[in-house]
Length: 359
Image 1: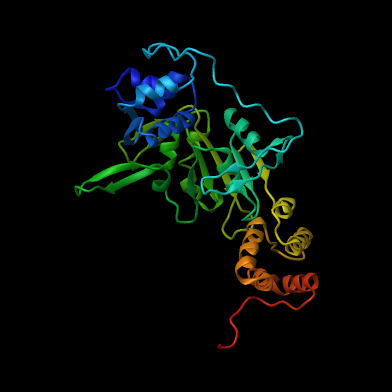
Image 2: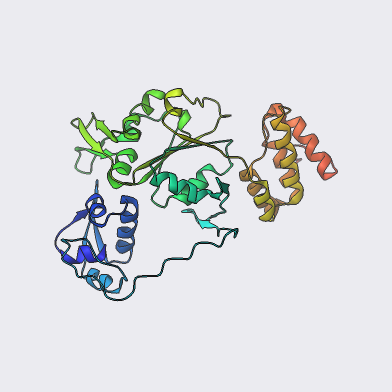
């Protein structure tokens, strides 16, 4: 990227233009350009779409980079010397290392089709096969997607999500006028990025219908609110969705399901919870409740998210309070059964965490 920008100091290039020149996805190109901007080795010009140009230090950055031959027409000679070594693939049967997510937490890959799940999702993206992940809240669906795709944009779906939230809408600017600001769907299409529809099945089917032309062979949408503009997806554009079947109002319509060729169930990894040194009794309780949930005795079971919260609460308030909170967060209709299970495992009566008498 630095070499292309340095070759034409006064010119600016969009992510799509750069992606076509180097033959990589728009997401990878955008990430590389953002790295240069962070280092002061490139300037970002505009955001809709993003464009970049060289700074006084871009040429020196290009000289340091161990790159191979650049695309014809860039005007930059190929760098001399051996190419940068590729990282060795993990040994057969070895455990893949954890992956750092944007929030600073680590994601521990799980098995999917004899591959680490992040690698499987990346391959599906390369093959342009949309994926729907489904399972209870707190099982790690969003964590997996964030770990798999560094260029991710996210739409948090709910019943109030509008077409404007996806595609964009007019917004008042500082001068008192109005400018059309593209939404995450258009941005992902223009820049070849991954787009997560989190809780997609909470979004109205009429709103989701605006997305469907981008998912089929057309890979285009029409922005009727902005002069009927047609947006065509750049290479790398990809849509992945999350679905929580047990959440009130979540409806997986046939129209939505048919757009996602691969649908993957995601449950809590209680083995991971144990390896993270979460209280063994809490993990055993969670396994027990999950087993009862599967046979219909209860409708709720603590997932990895609740177990991670248990550890934090235990550190701050103690294990007794953490067990009481575990009972308290259970749905009212399941609370007595959960309290009985927790009491049996801990050897003492447990009730929902509550305020006591005045001190």
